[in-house]
Every structure is written in C-alpha cells, then in structure tokens.
Length: 73
Ligand SMILES: [Zn+2]
Image (cartoon, rainbow, N blue to C red; front, side, top):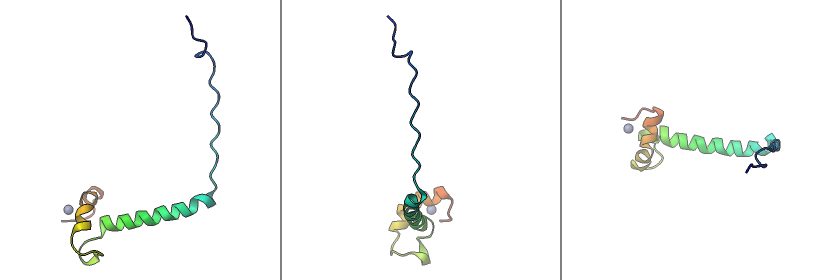
C-alpha cells in the first residue's frame, strides 16, 4: 500500500503581510517606556534613588540586578 498524499507538492506559503510603521510606532514607544521603567527598578532602585521605602523592590529584582551586572553589594 502506497500513500498518494505524500507525493503531492505542498502549496507555497502565503507571503506575510507587512505591518505599516505608523501602526507599530505607538506600541514600540509604549514598550520602550515600560522597558525603561523596568530597567530603572532593576538598576537604580536603591539607596538615595529609591522611590519606595524599604528594600522590597530591591530584593524583588535582586537576581536580575546581578544577572545584568549592575553593582549591588
Ligand atoms: Zn546583590
């Protein structure tokens, strides 16, 4: 018994539709702002630059701080 399905060529994939830059730009700006806020909390949120009292934020992102090579302790 032979399979005839495997002998057929596969249809060519449809080309991907291009997304206009004007539709991506606001989301790119939003993602950049969120990334900068997260980077602030990982890199700078401690000591004199702390926005929140205590060490909760610092301890929460502590492993990320060491992973990214920011000075810590
Ligand atoms: Zn540390």
